[in-house]
Image (cartoon, rainbow, N blue to C red; front, side, top):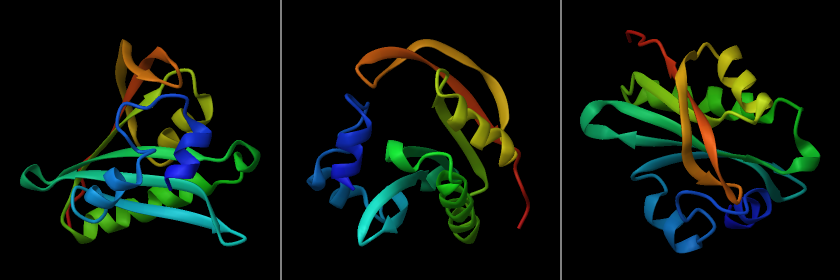
Length: 141
C-alpha cells in the first residue's frame, strides 16, 4: 500500500507512505480495502474509525493514475461503508480535495452530502489545498 501512496501523493497529511504506520493502524484505527491487478495493489481506500463515537472518516483514497475512471474507488468506498455498518458505525464523512472533481463526484454519487469547503486546510500533493467536506446521512441498522 505504501508504494501506491508514494506514487499518488507528493505529500500527505498522515504517513501512509510508511509501512510501519500502515501496519500499526490496519484493522485497529482504520479499516482498509484494496483492489489488486496482476498481483499488485492499484487502488486503496480506508475508513479511519472513531470507535467511541461510532463514526468514520472515509480517507486514504488513492488509485494509480493509469487506472482512474474505472469505478474502482466507488466500489472500495461502498465496501467500506458495508464494513462500517457491520461494526455499527453509522456516521460517515470525508474531506476531499476540492480540485479533484472525480473524487468529489464519487462521494456525491454514493449519497454523501456536500457540507462546505475548508480553505487552504490540508497540505497534500505538495501544496496547501482546499478541502470539501462530505457527510453521509445517518442510517439505522
